Image (cartoon, rainbow, N blue to C red; front, side, top):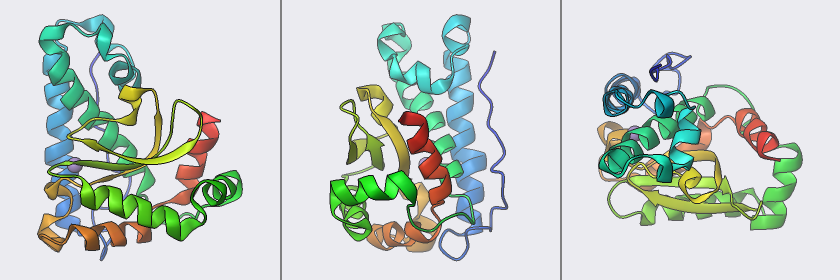
Length: 203
Ligand code: MN
């Protein structure tokens, strides 16, 4: 049993001009591939652990032997985080939240613009590398948060609905040091149909 890098599911250039084709290709075929390969290498002698979906694996890091826990955290997190990222960035789909998710965003954050501001601030304030998230917390409520490195809300009992990768590899070719511009552009390529399905699955 080994973890698999799924194809992106759309062309590398499908999110142009907001996310450029070369960044998408390197990000998927090199960065994400490396997390998958390193995770499989790390779990080579742990078939029972490797049989779990990666989301379950990283939600239960206490079950991982201490000698390989950090490697599973980093590479398992990297695999799970990027798999979610590609799915929620699909071209097409709703450009704004709808249905129950839209209502809960309104009651939690005020309105969609306030959510966008909160995510952009979380991503901009993350020192070094990490992610900004819209998630459902252990309390069942929507929240915006940020994690370092390849950590996931799953590691703290939450469920991510979407995350924005703020590692420099996610934006540097096009945006260089302008991480806030990249964070603003993300809204043009998020698929709120997929994010709404993620929310429905948690509920
Ligand atoms: Mn990345």
